[in-house]
Length: 247
Figure (cartoon, rainbow, N blue to C red):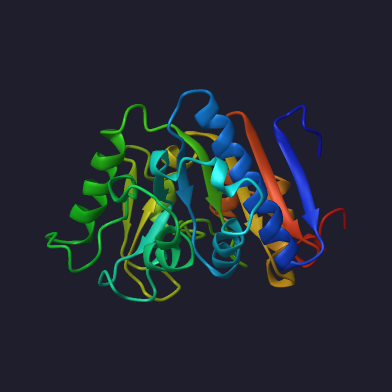
């Protein structure tokens, strides 16, 4: 895949190598954005590979060149569970990365938890959308996304009505096929409002979905096919996740 069209494939031998590569690239991106005089806005993802990446950032070269207090952290999706539930992406990110860095707590924008006092899941999703819209243009410098074996990204699953929501930033997902069932997700419109999108994928069980997404499958079948960066899209894969490419 050429860089001319803004897309690029980077392959790593193992999940650990993938995590290290992503961590190093993330540090470089944050330093570059801050050198331009801007506060980077990054949407984090969850899952096993995300935890590996978060821990790798702590040992990445140039980590201390980032002014961590001047980075806005957002989340692509969240499980609508209590704030201290280990299922929460935000809790996992705090434990693996954010608590070890001098971040500004006011710049860590967690999605609402189920015990945050909202009337229902829809109200919580609307509140997060309002928060994102209140921060300038809402343009992300980077959106990081994992890809499920079914091709889902964030909490946008194949065949979900949430795939057709275009009039809001964040959407309630009341019936996720993966537990827990209640979730909040950024919509396609919000995820695509990013300078760069990085797909971070590890494992052979995801290889078919990766190949179909990169080939431009219908988004209702493979939601990962529906997100691209405005300036660049990177597919960062370990060798197992790339086994179906070129087949």
